[in-house]
Length: 480
Image (cartoon, rainbow, N blue to C red; front, side):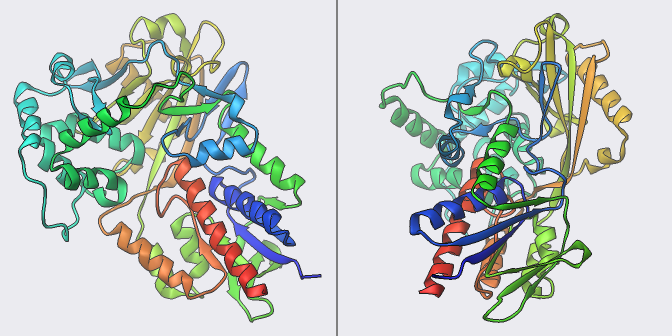
């Protein structure tokens, strides 16, 4: 009988758990014996996916939903039997707003992949001036960029195509809500490569977006289709719980609250050894580092200094979420919708706020409204040094100033995420390629996670599955 292969996954966030699940699937298909261990430093699994349930409230400390246009998360939910628990955003109160030029304004309809395609809603919203709208229209005739060797930032790309005002007031707050970054640093090739391709193919972002719209309208509408974002009825924590339960039942050793001290390369019989705190050692035929880039760098320093150096070049931003409960009539009297975003040019502490209980069903008891404030981001990490009371006070002052909510919250939950958001700055794709090349010099060693090819939940699941496929191919080719 073939010896059981040993795999150790360092990191028990969505990437590490998804990698373990994909490896189990491969082992079952190939009918191969396998021992898999997931080691997580925190005392819980899931990484930034943290759901808290209290007195009829469902609060999310990290992400509150995932994108449905990328299929990996939906497919994983189906495998775990969670599809029936997926819920769409509420149809009512579907408006979103932006705080710009001193007040809240409804975000203009007609944006396709962040590209404006309708003049009427833009004009009526007042978000962009007439001069700005005319400048946006110039995208129709501005030639596509031919010199592609100089990588553009998001700010450079959108300002060149649509003008600086449209970028500052329309595009930047959406980008900041996704990456918590500075668009003057983020690479458009690494963050939105599909928009770069759109310009190259159609010569114009607006022409390309309209072509996308025509292609979509040619398909029959699906009454059961998912909205752009979806979540689980009981919160995203149910995805983590379901994954962990399935792994545990299949014999995967899930170890939490344990720090990894080092990853060592040994010999052909025992390729790797993962040393845990207090000196315990786990021998492995293959290792996946599903940890932030700077943590993976610390493990790889003695194995591959070049890989560690490049990993250290991926910067991170810190963020915070403050979930607060208010009386529903008080909130609805001021703003009725999904929430609002805040452009960086407004120079506010708040990046965005979501009216969670209006956006998702079952998030708060009747008569209460759950509001989630998103703060921090690149250049505003100093907010992390404030204590909970100061952070909450600042969030409340922002809501009072921008929305008109004057009363103090009935309940507050503060979540801090230091160095949690990888920043895909200029040169990111080349850095990732170099990291992969360096790590490939060590057969059986892999890295995965949000630091490389996408920061969203579906991106992390997809990359974990791809990484696991490579690992399994290596293990069983080596065994044959």
